[in-house]
Length: 138
Image (cartoon, rainbow, N blue to C red; front, side, top):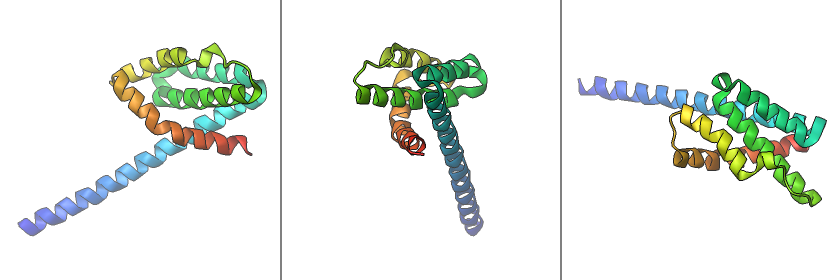
């Protein structure tokens, strides 16, 4: 009986590891897609192209939940980087306050408080920034 429990435990652990790996891959794909979309908006219409893409995503928030935070974060990174490089102030649309107002709605719908949402953003920001840099270099 003990051997069966151990085998069952190993099988469950292997399955959960596989599920987590798939989940992680799905998130990475979503972040890459959002980064590509933000860069495409920037290349086509600069800040206005990114604002349009972010606003469109939030208009269908029930379908796009976390994806909207990814594209918003990618667009904010692009705008801050571009504005610093060119010496102009960033768009108010991507200010910390405006960004926080938009993403707090996502976190609320996902059942996260602002502290948990901030942790999530701090966790995914470096990865999204890296994906944006890759897209911009193409």
